Length: 307
Image (cartoon, rainbow, N blue to C red):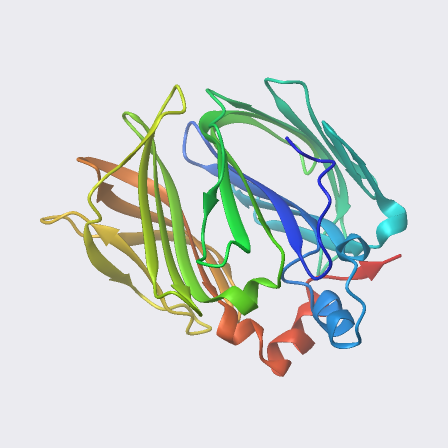
């Protein structure tokens, strides 16, 4: 799982999980950051010449569905970070990998209303893929879809939620701030009859735009599939543009909007990819928005910092 990776100055690494319950009524995302790419504190530190990503770590947990939404992302400094090949500790929370299953032990506090967020999530990929995809021409940004399809077991104590379902696991890393390499992207992953379908639309600052359309089977093998026609989606309340792709004769639509922020949105989208109707966890990210001063001034309300 490479939890002991050395993240270069000004760089970042994150490990991302999302999961949806079998009945479709519950969902979650979890992101463990070293060098939190969306941290205003990290951006301000770089402006001052302080470039250690270990000083800007956090575990983002978001729960959706019955019982309401819960969100936490507390940033912590290097003194609260422990790294090993198969273990990562950030503050009171921890991730561990036993070669088959990723176990995430959560002990966080929600914002803006502080409540306890505590429990355990297990993610078992059906297979682990062999390695990363380079996202930019200069070789500064990479993405590894570690487990494109898998199984989730969720046992939350606070709030009380117990469910199982399908899951996804990946990792991204880079040697420069994300906004230095990209203007915007739309990304989605969906369970597919063959395994998992992933779309990655990137507006890059150099080298032109790039789209990845990958279909993974349950053994972790990948093949390209034809990129369907663009399918614009309604913009959010914050007017973040979002779009996906959908095969001819089908219409993409937003089933639910999980997160709506000034620069980022996460949604559940119905579309048609690689010959099958699918429900996709979809994100749109505007790094042009993130770069603005007014957005960075808003972020501490969703992302407190503790040493």
